Length: 90
Image 1 (cartoon, helix red, strand yellow):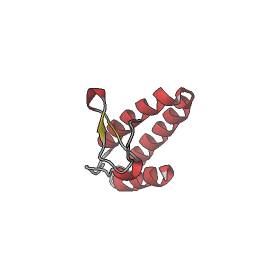
Image 2 (cartoon, helix red, strand yellow):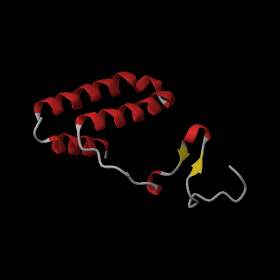
Image 3 (cartoon, helix red, strand yellow):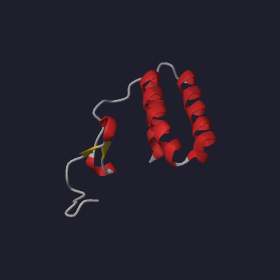
């Protein structure tokens, strides 16, 4: 960290267009509304987690399969599944 670094500063650019931010510094810019959007976001998140904690791959794959099964079980009420996912992560 540079001298004078403050966690209250704006997000800092990384190489490749990535940003380093604290969890409480950002909020979702787009709401996840369907299975395809959820799968895209989850895959991106999972990729980052596996880089840091590779031994969690099986657990994350099991969780992903469970959520996809929930999407199949409730095709007309997708927000139920999205809310279940949100509550599970909280």
